[in-house]
Image 1 (cartoon, helix red, strand yellow):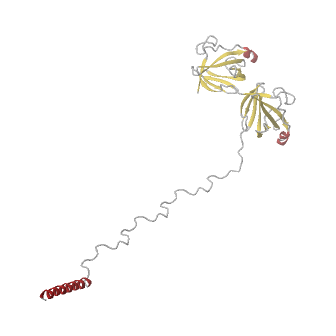
Image 2: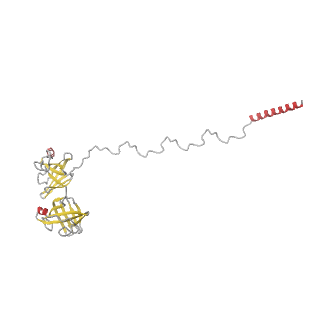
Image 3: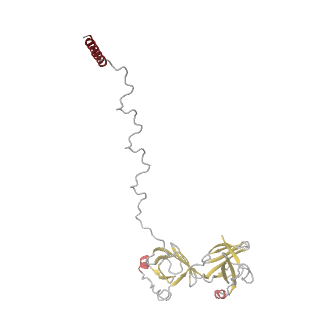
Length: 306
């Protein structure tokens, strides 16, 4: 009986203890606050702006606009036969964008170009008012190339107007070397001498060689020689001494020239010939060793380009 009573007492005590502990935990606040904020909110502000907007301004303007103004005017090609020429009659023809001039021992004529056609190969020009023949009238020049040679025909020389010159029938280009220019051959235009330029020699003489003249000038004076013929294949020039030259005025000279070891030399093979034909017939200087001999027993004269 006593053992049963003791057991019941113990059970009762345990039940009471459990009941009191549960009530104490339910009615008291937590002893500490939370140490951190809830992590649902971001802990830092965003460090960059959204990248949907451009980060820099455009550095160039849009390229849809043209960079240059359109040009409606056609570009006209220059006259294709501009240059200096010697024809087979000893006349020098100098053709520029604006003028066609002819000069020989008989005088000089100038023609002022008003229009040209590089497709149809012609030039229209007004005769200069100082020309000896047909001053201030109009000319038409047809030109053509055949077998590598350039020819021209002055198809009209006394037309009353530019329109009349333009309306003149073109010359026949079939065989310019023999016919087609008013019943005669066309006039062949040859390239100018290949040694045109400015030079000095070893004796301090200055040289100016153009399409029409060979000029020498030094402390001893000046001499001019008027070129009448030249040959770029056989390397010589024929010229008449100027009437003002101190030596042999109005006689004729022949100049031979050659190149050796990239040096240009010349020899005045003839300087007092009685005529152009006599100068042309003078034997050419010996080109074997121009630096030491071959020019009348002496070395040729070396020309150095300026």
